[in-house]
Structure formats: structure tokens, C-alpha cells
Image (cartoon, rainbow, N blue to C red; front, top):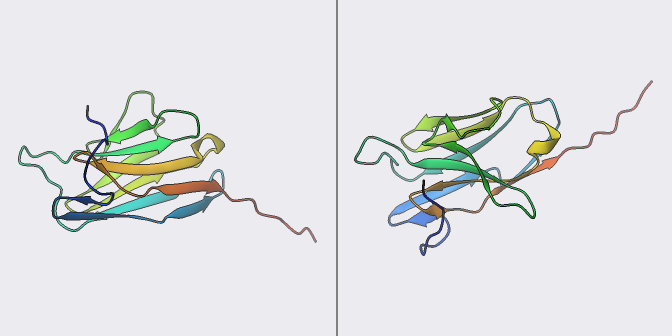
Length: 129
């Protein structure tokens, strides 16, 4: 297990530039949501693995690792969370968002983390005829 502690600037790891989108995402409980990240070059390591983890951070709590090595759910993580991708493009998907999923999401690769995605609840007003 590794952490996202790094002396490198946010969003870079040597010559690799990483981006995450969207910066903010309004979600409705019960609906799907996805967050994407892209690297300027392949993140495949020489041992054949891609050490990209996804995390959820809630105020007052330590970051929780959701996904490791692109697609492996961490112990205790609900199966509504899934990770996918390879090479330069990766996605975290929540199949059905629940209220407890609200928080700050980010990925980390080789010890470098980047500006996160803030996932917020979307409150819709409905007009009844």
C-alpha cells in the first residue's frame, strides 16, 4: 500500500501530466455518476501493473481508498463503486449514488495526487400540476 504523499507539484509526476474531470459534480441519489482522469502518457509500470488508486475524502475523516490498481475494490467498499481504464484514461463509476457517497474524490498514481473532484448532492425542485 502506498500513500499520496509527494514532493512533486499537484498534477504532475516527472514528465507525466494528469488531469481529473469534472472539478465539481452535482448528483441525484439513485442515479449513476462517473469521474474521469487522463494522463499525458501511459501509467503502465514496468512490472505490468498500473498503480492508480481512487479515494473518497469526507470532512473530519481520513481519506478512504475505494479502488486500487485501477479496478480492484478495497475491502468493505460497496459494489456500486467500480474502476476501469488502462493506459492513459481511467474512470471511477458509482452505479447508483447514495447520500453517503457525497464528498471529495481523487485519484493518486505513483505518490502524486491532483486537484480533486467535489461531489455534491443535487436538490431538484419539482412542480406538480
